[in-house]
Image (cartoon, rainbow, N blue to C red; front, side):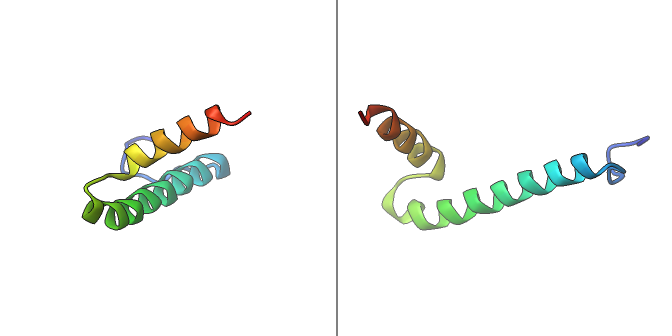
Length: 56
């Protein structure tokens, strides 16, 4: 790979980039759901993680 606009040649890199794209789409969808409530997806991730840590 010679510059940053070329697609990676190896499967692992392509897979990783696709995972990041899906994550971005999920965050965007989450923001669309939570913005009318005055929240953002990142805050819900933190609250969800805190809730998991509080379970016995």
